[in-house]
Length: 231
Image (tube, rainbow, N blue to C red; front, side, top):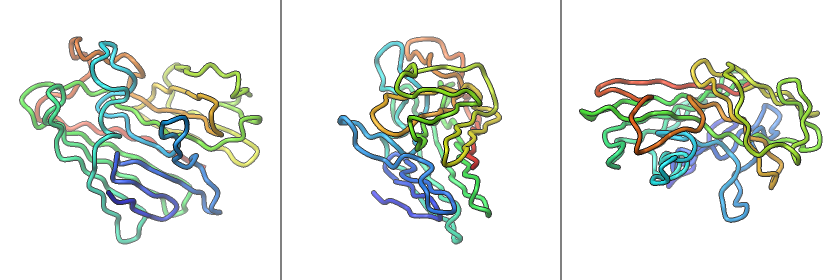
């Protein structure tokens, strides 16, 4: 597997995983990917084909996207990295073709992630994706969408009413998470590192591999999901 280094960010083909993201001054916006307590924390990864746990307890948390190998390529100006996963073979999700595009704007102040999924099978497939970015913070000084929070005492998992944006403000900077279609924001921390996760999702938790497909993608259909980080 290869880690692709672009301007201000890097992407690992293993999981299509953003391993680091920096501002124009070289300061980390994302907590660098690190093994903590036997688990990889940090960076930003896709939760595909679904976000959260399987209520049936059959398939893994946050889907398969972060566990498979994607084919990555950087653009000539190294502001865009595209990662392709050809087709899933799992019985529940076979035929799903996915593409991740990571793009840094010209000013180096906005990072946009786009997930494009096409269903090449002859059956509808469940599709409730999200993203899991770990934002670098000072845990003692954080404002979340204008409200001061104590990260150590923060409820580990909080689901918020649908919104198109949330902000994380620290002494160092203000970072805004923006999305027009991943508007169910989840905020999570385990207080094991200097990070806070603001996760744009389609529906949050609620996937059930034994249930009927209430949110999905029809045969031949293409769906596009996008969010941006601004600073």
